[in-house]
Image (tube, rainbow, N blue to C red):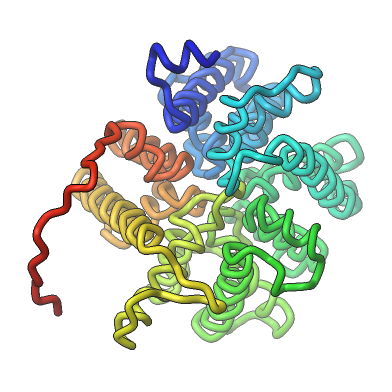
Length: 444
């Protein structure tokens, strides 16, 4: 394995990119089988590729309704792709190796470290075992809690499948649902007032989006917040603010006609689901423009590093705020919780934000021009794709081929990560110790 890596000069970023690509293509071929579609005919390759990409990249955007267009086999394929894409292809491969008893070498350990954003190679296999147990626990608990609700509505066999499917989809922040045309606006809108479904799905989304290292800190140090890594403290603080503040905004901007309790549930749910989950309990087509814009911002931010979620990440958003605050106060370094943020972390944060914003805006403008649709609607779809969210204003199924290919590329970019693609494409350049002569440039 080591010799293979040296000869082909394969880096961890290449493994991640190729692993996701191979999984997407495999899923597309499986979905193209005639018995994957309810009509008994092979779906066209672009539809299968789009569905497979959306599943692997845990997005949730669809061009065919999951419940009414795919057979049980097709739905199982979609759920398997969601699970593998959610935990990451490298992590999934290592879990299979652990279960088979195979020894994990140093190269594989380094790839795990990069895949789950671990700080060091040591202990990554033990952490992976912990992740496997945690995933099984949370997804199983979510399915059991929702089981009585779905069995009540659909009967036992179908209700049990719905409970499992929606639990995995929620934990992996995928947003795929099996409600089909049963509801006017699909997804979970008929459960908008159901606290069991709402709270369970929200908890699964939040837990899946926190990141595996944050899980490990909580397990190790329990409620001793000061002993957590700086990254975990930033993740938990930022995540809490990104749930609470938008929920208050949604409460006053939207849902004025709903009863008090349902209005609170809807506001909280939209605040949580907008950051990469993709479920909805309200119609986005009737949402006000300020509400749509707030949702777009949340979709771009996304979840946390090393999690099942996408987006430019909560830590990136936090570092942008912290570095801006440092500039306003004329401090030489950005600090948080008594720790100094290394300048390379700040540079990476601005680079990631620039990449996401640039691709999001450029893609939205191209789709707007190609489709002749309102710009805000197109930007909503591109933000949903690059943030791997899956929320839609109903535009995606009606897009032409070029626009669908753009969304496929955005979903792939959003899942594997902007820096992963950049590091895979751009070779390592070493400049030694030479540095250019400094010269000031006026800013602002």
